[in-house]
Length: 266
Image 1 (cartoon, rainbow, N blue to C red):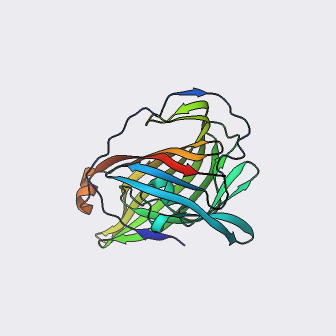
Image 2: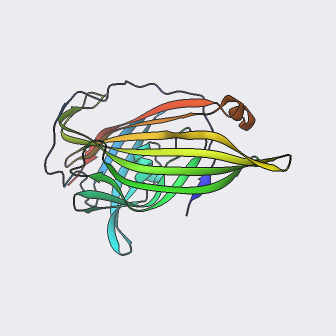
Image 3: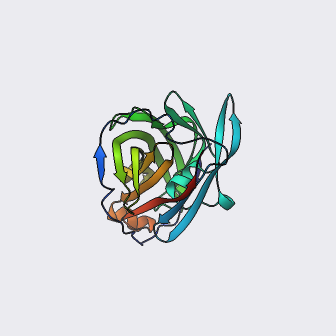
């Protein structure tokens, strides 16, 4: 079930370094413990965006989403502000053949500046693959739905995909923290929005949002630790006349970073 919610658009832009860290790139080996899935494991993240916040993510136990058993991820007080922690909150993750599979309600609009918010129900969506090559599409989910916004009917097409990233023998996070045996993976959301309106009795389709990647989130995963850094870019560009009609900014671009701080894994 999809829950579609228009979210407020913010004019504030976020600042961050364009440097994703110094690294030595190579093909890493044996990444089966990329994300340790044991009860009680926890990770805390400093989230830098429109404000600086802190997320506390932990594994609460097992959950069964028939027919498979997953580890359930939760955030302290059920509150998450970062893209990564929000995306896995109250969802199940399991390992299968060198892959990490996510099932549950995958929220992509939380804390992001977009024309729309979007929640998808995912089943065994691949979020990480041990031997993925850079640019390899790991999984893809597409769909279409309609929504009414201030009396204006909208047709929304989406494509959510996960993509393999780079491999590093050593990696330094933008905050200066060093890690070894790191692989990156990306989550990308592409949207196209149109509106069919009647003019002089004739239906006319107007393009509200040209097909474009509105969210690109890159997670850096250190073997036997988990996600150590996430960088999420949220951006869109609308036709100025259309934006004025909707009463929203014609464009926006924001960057959010999540830095691992305290963690305990076993």
